[in-house]
Structure formats: structure tokens, C-alpha cells
Image (cartoon, rainbow, N blue to C red; front, side, top):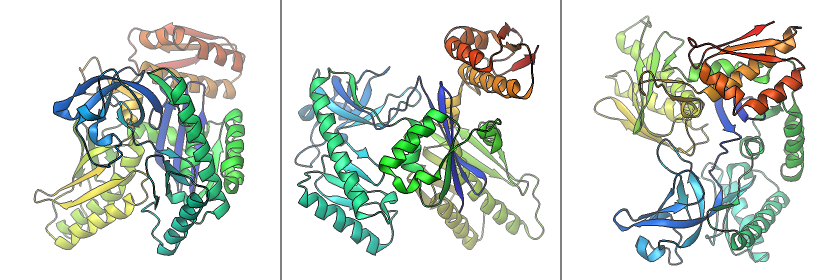
Length: 482
């Protein structure tokens, strides 16, 4: 399998796309003003203890108080205790974000700190070594356990380590280097935790560009293409220090055409925001996100097949299983997922569809669990959710339809306008550019995005004029060459 990682960097946001065999499989977006919180370590202050829920709310300096359950608090005995015995209102506590704020819910916290590096995860509260379940070779698992265990014992490292999937085949020296780095990092975190005041961050995870290189590079990845010179230099330095074998895979993309346009990623983002997904056979999926779960309905549509009705249904469901796995990754759908395959009477057909779903999900970075087909013909599954879905990042509830649908935010439209201006300024020789957009988008360009607009104007060397159009929706805009 051929795999490429594309990293598109602009001042307001960083976007990462994973392309497998020429097909976009995953998109991750991080905006500068809304940096991802998962993995961050804070010095929190307990603001409320709820004995009935066995939980507490902790202020860590975010918009909403974060949630900490008793089961996520480390105890020396290892046994679960009452929340009132573990924390008290007004008390200080060092916590880590395991799930970012989603919708109206605050972040989810734990005191079981884990710090990832390239090859392993450091667990200060654990006293043993482990190996990722995705490494199936028993001989390699034993090798990794032996290296980690003996080095931890020789160096008197008091904490636990878990070898990640990337550790498979890694040299002993590289693994030792990672363990020492993590131990030094943890000591610096402890020192900072003693110094900072409550409700402040102690440790932040890497920015998305470097995080993608740390977490996504594998033997299958042929190259990583980055369209920002400064991010490329940082990535090379990071790889030289932590991933010396991957340094040659990282390339700078200097092309005139935007890198996401070159690979068709922009089109895939647009499609991923639609409710309906067309299948090659003529069938289609209908995907609906709700507060409680995501539902996926499979329909034969225009596909009539060539043999029997059962054969037509089976082939549509097989194709749908592959398409669903891709859409889960592309849209970053998590939590409870209910799939309504077209009803099949043949038990062997049902088994093959489920196995096809499992095979495709084996490539997913997120943890998934699938049940068998229920008596109603539904497949219930879960997918670990640590960040908001693509739709929640890029869209907001439509004020016109009162939440029944979604439109792109004014922020998203502004960034699309910036990209369109760059595109047109490179293709055409003009005196100036005129942007026509809705009043909400123009207001944002003049206010929050004014600095970005000024930098873009300086970069292209052409003046950019703005004109509000009351009849334009928040997604509509035109860039006119003057």
C-alpha cells in the first residue's frame, strides 16, 4: 500500500491529509485560535464535587469546566474509591485532557498521565512495560518487552512504558533514546507543576504538523509533503532528532498550485460535508450525526444488479462496508455508530459483510469495536472519539433552519477566500482584487481576520477591496479581478 501525508500550513490553520493509493482517507484540521487540547497537562482546581455521579468538575482555564470521573483518578491501592475521598472542592490537582470539548460538553480529564513519543507511551503511574496489541508477531513482542524491561531496570526508571505500533522493528538504541527523553520530559513537567498557579497549562502536546510526523509516519508512508518552508525546516529538525530513518521522506512542496488542490483534497472535504455518499455501483449511503450517535443507512439506489435480488443486495452491502470505513476516518466520526445495511437473508452473506467491515477498520488509527448483525439487521459499533468531527470543526448550526442543517462558518469562508485570492493572484496579472461576500464574512475579514488579510495583501503585492452583499449566504463569495 502506497501512502502519502500532505501538510498544508497557513497562519490561521494547519491541515493534514492522509492519502492511500491516491485516495484521501483522513483529514485533520487544527486552527491556531483553537489548538487541540488532547494530551495537554494542566494544574487544575476542583470547583465542584458530585458524589451522586462519582465525579468532579475541574477548572483548568478553558471556556467550560472539565469533567473528572472517580475511575479516572489514580490511586496507590489501584482500587476505586469514593470521589469524596479522592478530591475536595478548592483542591489542586494535576490532570490531563483525554477528550476535548465536544458540542456542549466540557473536556474529559484523567490523573493517569500518559506522554507519547515516537516509539512508546510513558505512564508515570504505572510500574510495568507493555506492547501495543497491534503488534501481532509474538517474537517481536517479546523482544520489545525484554529491551524496555531491562533498560528500565538498569537505569532505575521507576515508571511504566508501552511500546507503540511504530516500535516494531526499531533498534535498541532508538528505544533507549526515547525512554530517556520521556523521563527527562516528565521531570521538567513535575518541576513546572510545582511552580505554576492553578488553572494553567503545564505541558502542551506538539503542534499538528509535528504531531502528524510523530504519529502517522510508518514503513508504508512513501513521503510527507509540506507546503510551508518554516514548518518543513521544523519537521526536518524534529525528524533528525527523533526519527532519523524518516528524514528523507519529508519533502518541501514549493509548487504554484495549492497542494490540496493537486491531490483533490478540497473536493473530498466538500463531499465529506454532504449527507449523502454515492457508491460506484449506483447505491448510496445516508449519514446523519446526532448528539447521541451517528446513523448510516445503506440504499441500493439505481443499482439493479444482473442476477438475483439477494446477490444485488450482497454486492451493495460489500461496497458500502468499504465506503463506510473510509467515511468514518474522513469525517472523524466517533462514539456510537449504527449501520443499517440492506436486509440479507443468507447468513454467509451477513458474515462476509461483517468480515469486510472488520478488515477495512484494521487500518483505522482509532480504536473500534463491532457487534454482529442484530435481529433488526443493524450493525452496532463504536469508534473512539478524541476530537470533534470534520463537520463540527468546519460548520455550525444554520440560524435560518434552527439547527436542522449546517453551513460553513464565516471563519471557514474567510480561509477559503484567502486560498482563492492566492490561486487567482498566481494565475492572473491584475491591478487589484475585489471580494464580494455576506456581511458576516466581510465583518470578520475587517475584524478578527484583518491581520491575516493585511499579511496576504503584502504577500501578493496587490490591494484587496471588500464589498458586503446582503443577498449572499454565509458560504457564498466571489473574488473579482479588477
